[in-house]
Image (cartoon, rainbow, N blue to C red; front, side, top):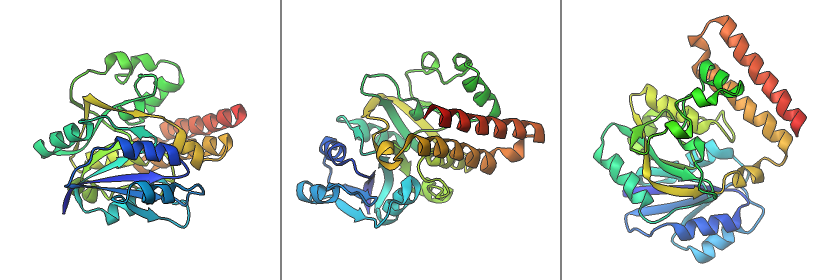
Length: 275
């Protein structure tokens, strides 16, 4: 068994994928698996040509993020698993630092680093709270500054968080297996949040380690997968309803649920109008 399996799910982002693979440190006890979701470019050929040590799994159709990563995890041999987006660059020592932290803390099921956008600002998906009705109200009424997840309130020290991003999610295999890995009811969005919720339900901690980072060219993979803004609008709100129905609806009275579902419906219509 290897110590670490790095799973990179890719779809029509050849050059970003190549750059990502170039940025990864070589390690004899690590393996890298690229799962290609039926790309129409020559991603597969280029990976096989330039990175013969990388294992490539070629899907006949686009399975989406959850199912694609689950397939990679099924073939992985690592005690730890890192899901990594192809539109990322990984500086030296980032993976090593996060992996060492998980190894030294037995109840940590998953951890992430600081995820930066190309301009150096924080990609907030790496440091999220669960979308409760209260947090949703703060977000959509413009009072996000009251949330503990605003930039000025995020401490620059290692601390526990609700949820990380699947763009860089380093997980203990035992924890992921116990939680059931990614829920394939999600196609492309929300599955990382859902997995974090289930990890927490099983008593695992999720940690944020800001001393190391990656750069995320956010949206590149999603743009390739979601061919139109209209499809994005529909998918991005559908996952909100899936998550809320699965995990939160039973905890709130009818009138709160009605308010939430009405808000999701209105948000969908607003996004469709803007496309």
